[in-house]
Each structure stands twice: as C-alpha cells, then as structure tokens.
Length: 165
Image (cartoon, rainbow, N blue to C red; front, side, top):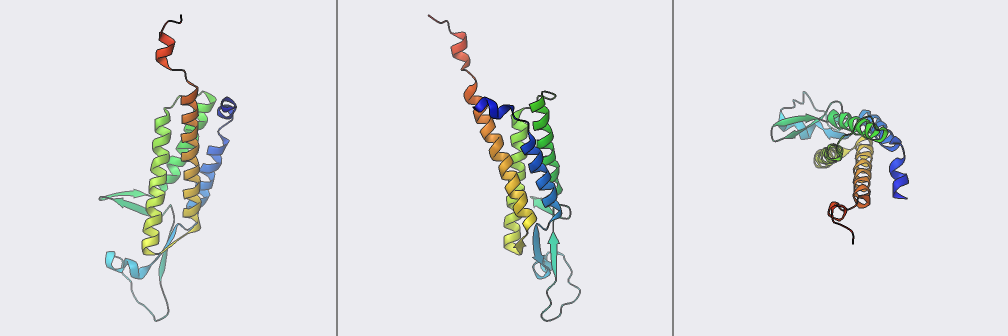
C-alpha cells in the first residue's frame, strides 16, 4: 500500500505551490502605522478616530534575520522549487536529494511562522498568511511521511552482505 502512494504523481505539491502563489497576493498582515512610527516610518499626519495601517503580503514584506533581510517572496519561489523538484524526482527526470526538499520546506514553515508571530505582535494576521502556513505545513508533513515510508521499505545493508545459512 505504501508503494502505491509513492507512485502517484506529485500533483499535490503542485496544488500546494499554486495555493501558496494565490496566498502571496492576499494580505499576510495588517500593521498599524502607530506601531511603525518608532522604526523609521514617518506618519505625516493623524486625525482623531482615523487610523492608518499598512497591508503586507509576500511581495512587499520581508523578515529581518540578524541584519539579513529575506523577502517574503522567497517562500513562493521555494514552494515552486519544491513542486518542480518533487515532480522531476517522481518522473525520473531529476534525482534530487530529499534533504533539499526538506530543507526548503522547513525554511518555508519557519519564515511563515516568523511572519505570523511578527504580525500578531504588531498588528493582525491576514488570510494569505494562514493559507500559506497551511500549504507549507502540508508540504512538510507529506515530505516527512514519504521519506519515512521509503526508509521503512529499504532492507538493511548489513543483512544483504551477510551470508545466509
């Protein structure tokens, strides 16, 4: 039964990458301008009862990791890379190591959750970020399950080399 699930086309990864692409255009977070005022963002004027806020998505936001600015659109690019590599591996056209796929999936989940906590701390979370986190988590769990299923099927190397009596 595990063999059959490994032979299915990697359409699920393509669908997840498309969901992430669609989620990249939706709002990821909404941050009030008052939260950004002390970080170099200039609020030109304010009226009582009027609140200025900024909507962030994958195309106009980034995370700052110890001085290194990583744009959020790298999540979309790496999701497309996961889908392409998985499709190439499934079709036999490209034998990519599973560690590359897992590394990109882990990167996507970490960045998405990082943006989630930043959005919660400074504003509100948007539907695009929720959709992106869900699709990234699905990719990571599916890759992990497939890798563990493959490892269970492979015979032990030591038993293959030892003589049978």
